[in-house]
Length: 189
Image 1 (cartoon, rainbow, N blue to C red):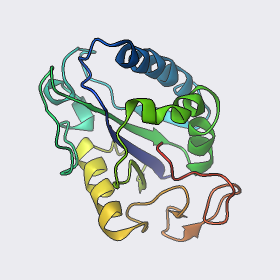
Image 2 (image 1 turned 30 degrees about the horizontal axis):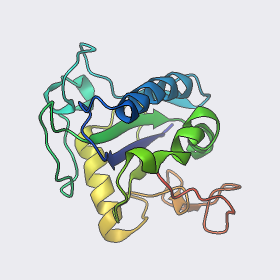
Image 3 (image 1 turned 30 degrees about the vertical axis):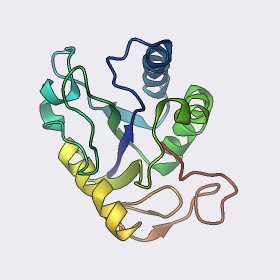
């Protein structure tokens, strides 16, 4: 059975190394969000450094998730002092559990504050695609799909909650997800 891959990417207003309370708050909330999401039904896994090490995203060993890369539009630094991004790569059983995990609870609370931490851009900040059972998506896969979404809008190759597809490539409409939904699901995941 195919699994749903999710890549998220956002450009932070300040570098991760910034010692201000706002950056510390972002880290603290992020740890809570990861813990809660990893317990959510339908969650399978997310990219974590192999050695649990510290450092920049760029110099960590991500194992089967591949080398860490970023979209071409990311223009901030890649050193410990200048990296200003947040990115996730995860696997889910289906759209509904991913939607429920992202738009409820502590993650929803964090989304409500996203512009405290993240720059507003014209680029998409998340993308979904289906992978075969047993396949681990890579950071490069996520970046390629996000850039494809930017260039072509939602297709079976790269899509959003509002314009989603099932594993066979047929447009999918799940209650409260889709173009006629009252919920604003195309905000940052």
